[in-house]
Image (cartoon, rainbow, N blue to C red; front, side, top):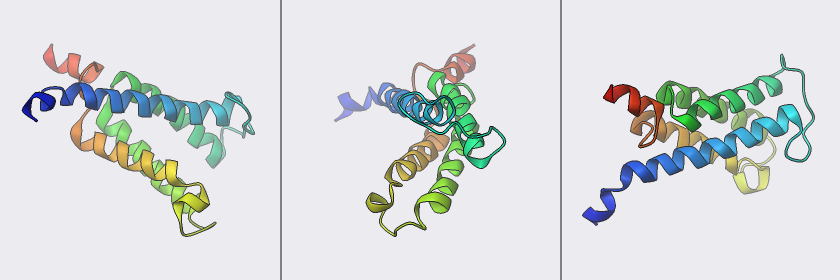
Length: 128
């Protein structure tokens, strides 16, 4: 097991990068209609603000820049999104479509405490 622990920073970075890419895709779908669909809401609406946070926050998390504060904001946004949009529809996340929001919330919350892992701007700045 100790041999696997040696790769924990790289595994954390993979979790950060893949979560960020999926998060960005949710934002581009909202604001740009890509991939497939999206309503392109006004930027000054809650839905538009969510799209901006998903794209900008996702990009920052992707490269690992200001990871902890950005992940905190994104985690909170996902908690709010779940309770505003998904939870009122049905109690069960698989029935209300909120399972992705919950997962994003807790992955980003984990990044707040764990940091960005390997291959990040934050990591290269702390070494300099």
